Structures are given as C-alpha cells and as structure tokens.
Image 1 (cartoon, rainbow, N blue to C red):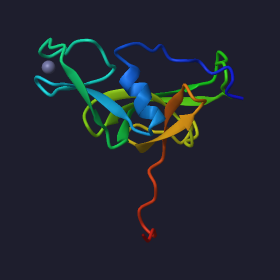
Image 2: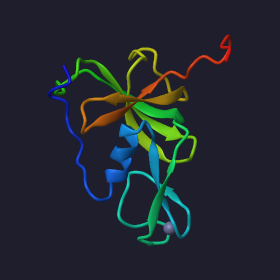
Image 3: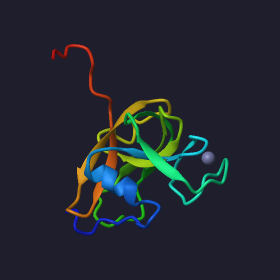
Length: 140
Ligand code: ZN
C-alpha cells in the first residue's frame, strides 16, 4: 500500500532530518551562531548567514496554522482524501505535514497536534500528525 509513496528529496542539508525521523525524533535545524531555528533546512542561516549549523529535537507538539483537505488529484500511495496541515511547532517554526487521524470535516485552525512517525521502509520514515494523547484518566 505504501510502495508507491512519494519520496522526499534528500541531500546534505536534510539528511539529519530523515535520520531523526528514523530515530523517532523531529529535528529542527538550528544556527550555531545566533541559535535561530529554521525550517525547512538549508545551508545557511537566513538571519545571520552563518553556515555553522546544528539541530534541536522538537517536542513534537504544535498547533494547526492552516490546512487543506486534498481530494484530487490522486497521490501515489495514498487513499484520498488526506488532510495536509501547516503546523506551528511549539518551538516556533512552521512545518507542513499529513494529519492521519483527524477527518477533513474535523480539522480546524488552532487544533493541537502531536507528531508520530510512519516507517515506510529502512530508508524512509515520514513524520505524520495526530490528535494529542488524552491526558486525563491516564495513570503511569
Ligand atoms: Zn544564525
């Protein structure tokens, strides 16, 4: 079912991100000089132009800034409709992602989401977004 999934472009600037998802970490690039976070990853810092970069591991929680419910055209490896959201991470960067357990008529701007990881194969693990885990009623 996922055999035909679209594979993201990977390169020197994004490898840390995909190594992160494989380790179930959502990594956000960080400038070593001014400590600004940025997404998508790139070779230099848009704020101070430094090429010295690192990353932080995001908490994996965020808020829906905007979304689309994609019904057409077909997407390889996907059963439509799918919900694609722009998510403002709590760390302050904005990321696009697929929301996997919220229906198209349930998603709304401002909704809280948490990241999860969908392993496709040894090479690729995609971040996906879900409703936050219920806090009440859970015992450690
Ligand atoms: Zn910088």
